[in-house]
Length: 267
Ligand code: MLT
Image (cartoon, rainbow, N blue to C red):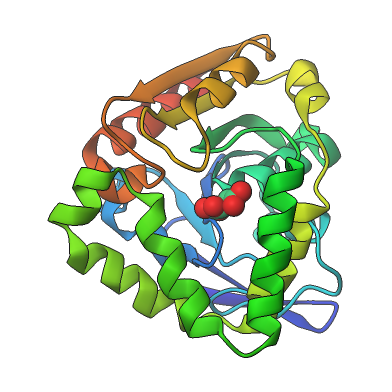
């Protein structure tokens, strides 16, 4: 079910199952995507209270006031408040993981667990920043469709992208529905995001790491370096998988996320 709340006059879209109870599994999408990115995992998660949010600037959510992971974390908090939900298990894919870390720093008392799904806590390298700045120039020059077309093929393990061009094409088509302003804001937000190593060290709840052995964006080694920081971590490296476990290995991803949620719910 789609819901829209107004936060300071801006719309935030979120999606719930029929029954929303305390401790929802909150899923945050990655860059240039929206809450529909989780669609292949939803049937397997049907028994859980799943709550998906369109981060500001994507899907049905308006642009944030200012770029940054901070605004994304506040949007998630506004949704939880709207639903009178005290605690959740928050899992973010890639950029959604950066937002989840920001949330964990700002609102630790709202978390019973959080997960980095192909994500890590490290700030951008200088090369990554340069790359993002080139992206912003392209988008400002009106080349949104071209930008999106070159983005998605590089997110999958090479074999998977070759065997499933229809999945890559669908993501490109959906990505072209996102506004250039929302994409630019996300790029600026990722450039400016801070290192969250300390947030992981301070985590009082379990932290999930789901990594892809062949992830070209978040190398598994970078994720593993972060996985030793929290007091309690659940760590998985999926063999042969790139950056898009929800498409490349939906069943395995469901099993890992479901078991993590169940563990957090039992504590
Ligand atoms: C994502 O999938 O959200 C992005 O690739 C993350 C990034 O560029 O760091």
